[in-house]
Length: 307
Image (cartoon, rainbow, N blue to C red; front, side, top):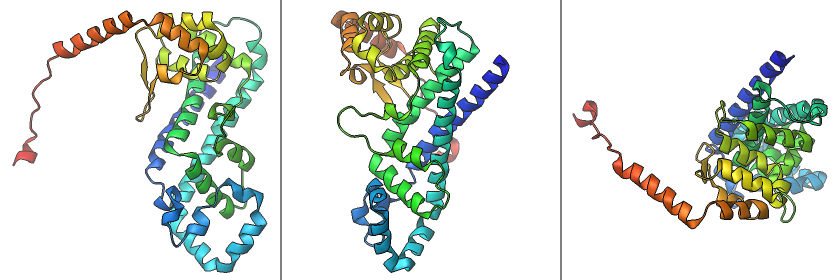
C-alpha cells in the first residue's frame, strides 16, 4: 500500500509542479483587453464581465444577444488563449480536489499520534507546499479581476461547465476582513498538524524545497500557530530561520518572513526575540565577507558576437 501511495503522491507532485509552470507561462499571454477592459472599444461589453455576471445571467445575455456577430468575433479572436486557460483551471480543480480527497480518506491516521518520518510523509509535506504555492502564484500572476473575467468568458462558451462551483469559489477575489486565498483549499486540522510535525522532524528536505520553504508554506495553513503558539514559533524560528529570512519561491516570487509574519503575533515576537540587532549585523558581515572574498572570472566574449 505504501508503494502505491508514494506512486500516487509522486504523480500528484508532477501535476502540481506543471500547474505552477503553466500559471507563470500563461500570465504572459493574458490579452490586454482582459487586463483593462476600458481599453477595448470593440469587446468591452464582454471582457468586462466578472463574477457579478453570475447573479444576473439572463439579463446580461439578453442584452448581448443583440449582436451575435460581435460575440462570434470575440470568441474567434480569443479562442486559443481561452482554451489554454480552461485547461489550466481544470488542472487546478483536479489537483486541489484530488489532494483534499486524499487527506480526507486518510484523516483517521492523523489522529493516531506521532508518525514516522518516511517517504510518504515527505511527499505529503511537498504536496501541501505545492498547494500553497499554487495559491501564491495564482494571486501573484493572475490577479482576481483578470482571472474572473477570463473564467466568465470560458463559462459563457462552455456547455458542460465542469468544476464550475469549485472554480467560482476558488478564483473569486478575496474580500477585506477574514478572507484569504488559503481558505480556498480546505484541509483537515489533523493533516496540517501531522505535516508540521513531519517538517519539524526533518534534518533537511530531500525534495525540491528546503525545510525553511516547506515550513513557511505549511504555517500559512495554520494561522492559529502563527498567531497564538509562542513556544512553538520560537522553537521553529530558532531551528530553521535564524540564518534564513528571505525565501525564493520560484518564478520570481520572493518572500521576506518578517513581512510575511508581520500580522501574526506569535511568529513576529519569535522573530524579534531570536534575531536580534547583533545577530543581524553578524549575518550581514558574514555574507558581505563571502561576496568580497569571491573572485569572479572575466567574461569571455563569444566569437560570433564580436566578428
